Length: 211
Image (cartoon, rainbow, N blue to C red):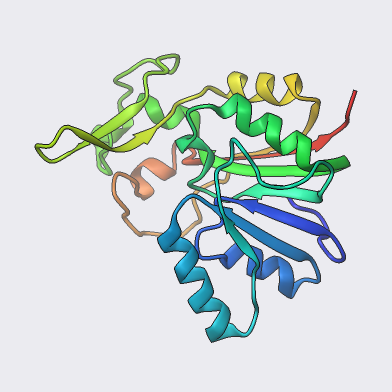
C-alpha cells in the first residue's frame, strides 16, 4: 500500500513504538513518527536503542501535525489510529497539507461492517444486531468515576471515500483481507468463526492530487 519507500520521507501518524516506521527505515526510507501517547514514544526510544534503528518521533496529534507544508512523500496510519480521531476531517486535511503533490496516503481501520455485529467470537457474533448506518461512537466509561476511557468512532465505507475525495485524494486501493486458512487464534470478539464470513479490517490507499 505504501509503494517503494526507498529515498522517501515517510510519516506514520499514530506511530506507537515505531515498529512500522522502523520497517520503513530498513527499506531505505526516512521514516518519522508522531503519537499522542507519551508512554508509546518512550517505548519507541527503548526499541531504538535495542535495535540500533532510530525513528525520530514527536508528541502530537493527527489534527494539528507539527510539520511544514509539502514535507512528506508518504503518510500512513497502521491499524488502531484513525478510528479514534473525532475530528477526522481536520486530520485528513492536515495529511493533505503535509504531503507533496502526488504523495501517497494509506491507512487501515476496523472494517465498518464490523459494527453491525455483537462483540462475540462465537456463532452469536454472526447475527447482525445494529444498523450499519448508526454512527454513534462506541464509548467505555472508566469504573465509577464517569470519566471516558475509550472512544471509537464509526464511519461507513462511503464516509471514508467521500472524505478522501473532498480533500483531493484519488482512491487507488481498498483491500479487505480474508481470514488466513488454518489460523485459529481467538482475540477479543474475533475468531475464525466470524473471520471466514466477514472482514475485520479495511485498508485504504490513495494518491494526493492538489486541485
